[in-house]
Image (tube, rainbow, N blue to C red; front, side, top):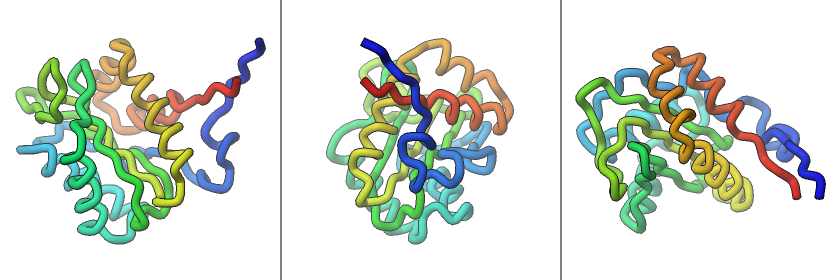
Amino acid sequence: MIIERHTVNELFPDLYDAELTTADLVILEMEASSKEDAATQLAGRLHRAGRISDLDGFLRQVNAREHQLATGLPGGVGLPHARSEYVTQTSIAVGVTRFGYSIDFGAVDGPATLVLLMATPAQSFSEHLEVLATTARSLFKENFRESLRRAHDAEVIAELINSSLVFFDH
């Protein structure tokens, strides 16, 4: 069997005129008091970048999704996400907490120091699942998580996230 590697842009060219994340969508030294506060800060970045049209509407959907099932991953990661009619393009906003801060996203092994808020348009069910699965797969790798935490540079973090989103076509 031959496995071909494809980038997000190759698989979904009409949906991805821009990268999934940029330096403007990264918060370094994030200080959040709760998962709702973290989502608000990250969604604010998406809203200012024009990637979501209604900040409050989107946050209601993120928080409703969060109440259905915890989005904490092992290794200190929070991965809140929502498909929403308020999302104009699939995007990921990233927060790396300030030393001494952590946020409870319900992971068995403890709170998160790395938060990725994923936003996809409501009609993008398959793209949502592909980006979510690929992001989660990358985040399960300790080296990848540590690279994000140690980068201390929003451009580097954005590039790490964008370059990790490679899909396999079986």
